[in-house]
Image (cartoon, rainbow, N blue to C red; front, side, top):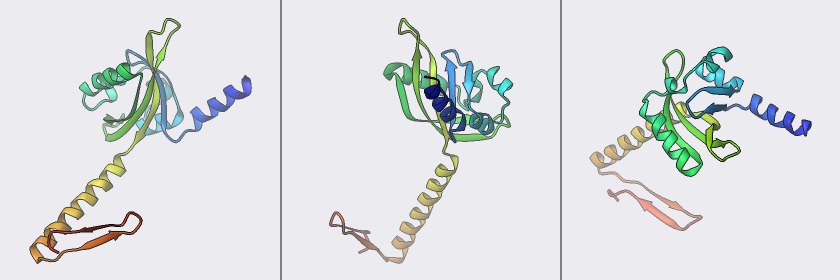
Length: 159
């Protein structure tokens, strides 16, 4: 049993995602080192923090609670969160409810992943694709491709 607990403790502490356990009311009970680094708080600050303070839009906390309590979990729940220094970040939350012996919800446990850079790259790619489509339209120049694995051809309207 002790060996098993040690493995889970190591997983919790060494995860490169922010891992947390909180009460239903938003008090952080336990967080890993990466969460402290990601959000810029000390352990003491984190345990005194009302988790609603890290939400950029406070209604998102209510939306999260409604979703997790209806299903018992959330997966890839997208939300904007705020670091201690005020920097906003796009995040994905994967979490489950915590229950007491009577099956009442007493809190949540989960993982928060910063996807800010991924979102920035996706937006940049979308802009580039839009520019390319507009340039093709203006130049009356098209393109095509063939997906050999599924035998599907794709082409632009200009072809």
